[in-house]
Amino acid sequence: MNHRHLAILFLACLLLPCRMSEDPRPDNLLFVANQLEHSVLLVDPMSKQLLATVGVDINGHEVAVSPDGRFGYVPIYGNTWVGKPGSNGSTIHVVELRRARAVAVIDLGKEVRPHCAHFGPDGLLYVSAELANAIYIVDTNTRSLVGEIPTGASHTHMFVISPDGQRIYTANNEAGSVSVLNLRARTLLATVPISKRGQRISISPDGRFVFTQDQETPRIVVIDTANNAVVRSISLPRIAFSSIITKDGHWLLANSESGKLFVVDLASGVVAKTFDTPDVPVLPTPGEFALASDGTHAYVSCPQGGTIEILNLKNWKLEEPIRLTKGVDGMAWVPSDIGSAASDAR
Image (tube, rainbow, N blue to C red; front, side, top):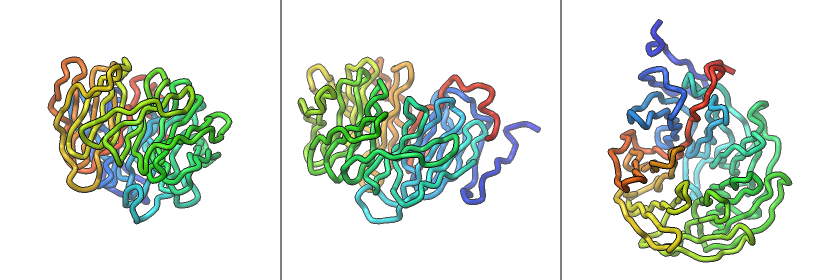
């Protein structure tokens, strides 16, 4: 039977229809959370087509993809946003990417609002546990919680892992600080005060600097990772939400609820370019960035516009966006080197 006509089965606890236009290619795909529709998407950024939709619980904001590209992981945060009242998630949903189907649920044991997720150099999955003031550590082979690292601060929402795999830097939203963690020793090394409130975090490709967005003043705070101290701030026309550094380390991209995308020259700290993206009159707030592996394009999710905007980093022009539905948020790349084993169900 033609594969594109096969019905896709899901776990009963994850019921939501799945639509597939064709068997998704195992390379160059974006795995995207849609928090308003309680789903995750497989998107081809080249054709700008939605290939598959998989239902998850309420709500997944962020996603991660296993290093072998076989599985996607969706922390279920709850039906609200950071610092707001609402339900509290306690699970991570597992999606088999090649077949676009939900296959398992990892139970974290208690309601912690799991949010951001990244794989560490040890192959373990690290997940921010917002209500536990910690980073949880998950073994995806046994699909179980195996440890945690305390952040010493409330509302640990997003984090980055240093390029050398030694450190974790967390953005603690309501605490307005950044925590520095020793990944291997699983200990808190330092806490860097930023503001009354902070939002999201990024790191330079060489690991020398960490950047986080002040939510009280329109600036991005720069932390020197050699001494875990603030060394400067970058002024912006509007308060920024998230940021990312280009692969050459030259430019910082930042988005704003005003619908502006700023490009900052990191050498001078000056805003060099500004682009228009869908603004954010109501929640959910702006989305996040994903850089193409060749460094030529930046992808920016816009939950209110239901689009993924595409910025060409060679000619500095916005290309025609990927048009999806409202709620698109966290993104991760499905790697290009998936072997044939990726099609096997676990």
